Amino acid sequence: MIALATHLEHPDAVFVEDTALVLDELAIVTRPGASSRRGECAAIAEALRPHRELHAIDAPGVLEGGDVLRVGRTLYVGLGTRSDREGHEQLARLVHPFGYAVRSVPLRGCLHLKTGVTALDEQTLLAQPEWIDLQGFEGFRVLRVDPREPFAANTLRVGETLFVSASHPRTRERIEAAGFATRALAIDEIERAEGGLTCLSLLFRRREASAP
Image (cartoon, rainbow, N blue to C red; front, side, top):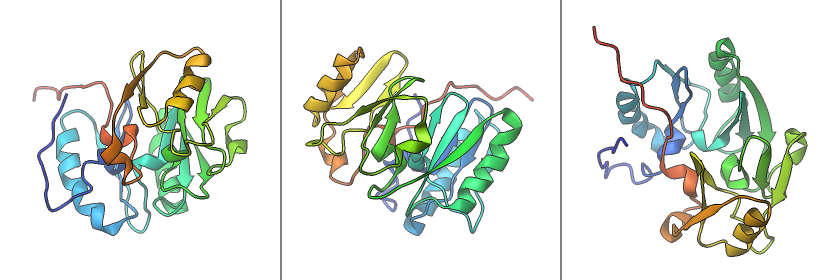
């Protein structure tokens, strides 16, 4: 685990996912759509530098990591208030040499794509259909969140463990009925800011820098 220093001048820095996208082959430092968050990116770049070749999203494009859902070799990019078409196109150019496809998903009511959909495995999605266009996810098995828990779609898989929010027990029951084992975490304060489980970390296999 890599623990980052506290940056009191950036109160949203706890949502570290938005500042970078880390793939096996490279890391992409984003350009947040919220201009107040762009100062967070320098520290993230330095933390990632020993582990990946770094690239960046350049102005005028904007892209936040919470809008990028990776399923296999496909990156789904939410287009809303925090990520735009230019950011999508820059991302596509950066990852194309490594065999990734990039597809856009229009948003209609949530801050980030992963507020509305996450992957339980490479064949199954958990989604809030009121906020995303499911036509962009043809071929997947789609579980829908319980209508009484509209923010329940944000889950986090770490290895074989699927973490879910303790605030959404009805949706957790749906996930377990579909055959998934879960572990609930209490993130009440994070959820007050429309944050979710994926927002709080960047997950990747550490690769130390080669000796000179």
